[in-house]
Image (cartoon, rainbow over all chains, first blue to last red; front, side, top):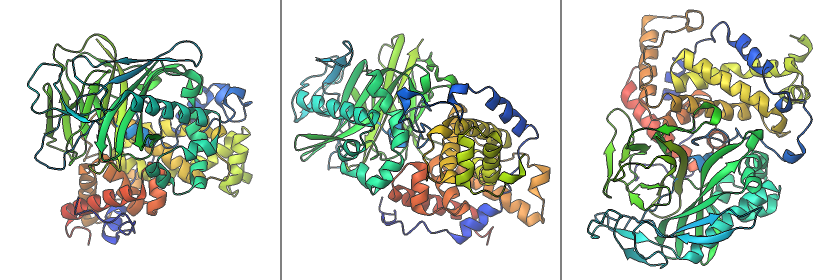
Length: 378
Length: 182
């Protein structure tokens, strides 16, 4: 990272050489029927969503879900940070040579029980150990291999609870249009991302439409994955899984939210992402919001070059450092920048609805990327 | 098309469009279409995919117009939607390599001297080699003239991320382009 410019934006003035080069690239016109096709599609738009239609009272604060929707596995909901976010359980040791495999600590599963009253239970990892300590713990992966490579920044049940609660409170604030609460409850990196509350407010309606849908629909499950524990700072990813109805279209999905815990206080960090995550298998949610189907026993994601310990996790099983844990492989891409992470769960992928979560964090814990995708294993 | 709308500023066209005026919306799209095509084509390097992404983007913009926040910049808003649509398009095609020999539209390509054509192919190939995040960043800043804060808003990333992506993208492009465009 030493070759990177400082974060002062000083490198972002137009580069005359590159600018000239880009101007040499001719941009073609549309095909002849482009505008006709568009007109036809617009004609087919549901009148209730067309401009000029009466506002839906349930969505009075609805914003544009397209705003900032970057890398999500689905195009409908998640703001850019979330789309790139991952559920990294990265215990990148100070010593570069140290290989740390982060095993999922405990998993908090919030079972849905009626309206908004939820009960909480801890669903322990398959066969990992120590799910409740706050210390880094040497443990074993689920497949029974020796524990020499495995270290987990496990977090306590209390941390899991306050993390989940922080995310649920944040989406509730957005859903309720409470800009003050939504702004003040975010962590420092996310607030710095916007620079000011006014800037945050500009995007509030879009976030309310996206995240706010969770305040109405309520998640069926909340999975908390530890990411990094360094000093008094802990990073986790909270994945909400459930059925929500943005834009009036019911959709079952999984969305990942980073949370920073400092001194017993949990703050959502939805805009603190460290970089991109690309799902290859399963692919992102296809057009129409249908769930991607995976028929193979191998899952594949791509993370940027330089990410040293991407974390992968299937459902609420153990979180694994890709390339270190059994059944995972991390390789450089041949034709492009990035690293390919392949996950082949022992015994295959059980048929049914599954959630794949991928994450990584910057070594200093300042940034975190995490993303979850819901798919159907054939 | 109603000629009276053609000189209205975006903010007024948006208001008309939000009230259901399709002509106003059409005018808005056509006003910004050049830049959206520039972004989409440089990201996707394929005319058909560019059109597919822009169909998707414009339709989403239409459907989202009710939620467009008054006072915001329509162009920036549309950029973001277009950007997201391009990313979706890329994902739909998985990691299929970007075309480097996309047939150039005979009308708009305006073939010039051989040197220019050769250079444009070099640029296209060099751009296609960049990771998506770097490609879009360099297109926005060096191709479209956005400053880092605007680019960060469109991309939904921190300004520092824009800076680092730009740094890498420029270094890669300069390596490939060499003296070609000087």
